[in-house]
Length: 285
Image (cartoon, rainbow, N blue to C red; front, side, top):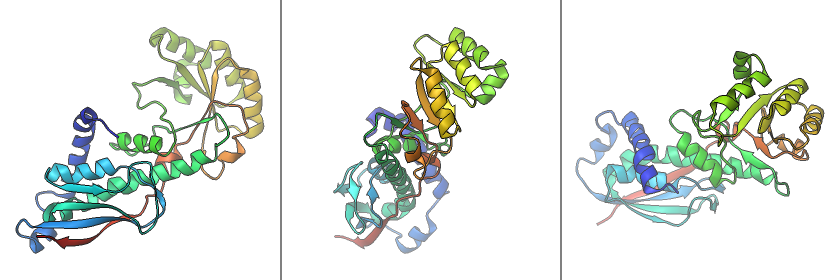
């Protein structure tokens, strides 16, 4: 869950922006059928099996519209849910329930979809010591939600943003003039507390990165035999990450390699939503 400070500083402004995107100045449909305040109740229903994630954000959407909205929630983030289960009951002004519905569900479906997909991929690494990592391939302005969802699904977060760590990719290496030069420059610039990670694509680059003293070497888009040879070259002098088009369909082919991390952009950019719905809205006295 997000703590109160994170909610106020980093989450609420994004939710409010999403609500403003959906409501320019009024909800015409709702105002047409509900001109005045009336209390109502609606059920949150699972339409697919999966891992629930984002219930706090779901609630926050309605609370920002009306802080008197009440929630009776039967599951928490990380719980396995089944198709047809009632996940929660929401009680409040019917106008608020209608106007916040789509935004609340968009967050919950997206976050639950990422958690579900991550859980499926992470389960394929059971029995190994490999950590499954996400990437920065997130939806703009939704990174805080998507990276949280990865952790709920059993994955781990790579660096949060460009200020969070040194990762020298192909274009950084090109700009610096080579792997050795890039690592040397990073070591002289970055604070000593930061690890330096280098993305490499060839065995020659692997040798350069290891000799230059990189802390983490990322093997990017290499075939299985090349990765095995690269691991031998590194020989324990750096932590090793595998990256490049890793998905649920192919991760088992590389889990036999003795590496520390496998990163996958698919966790956030390719996870399908989990189908959830608000149903049975009715007035109450």
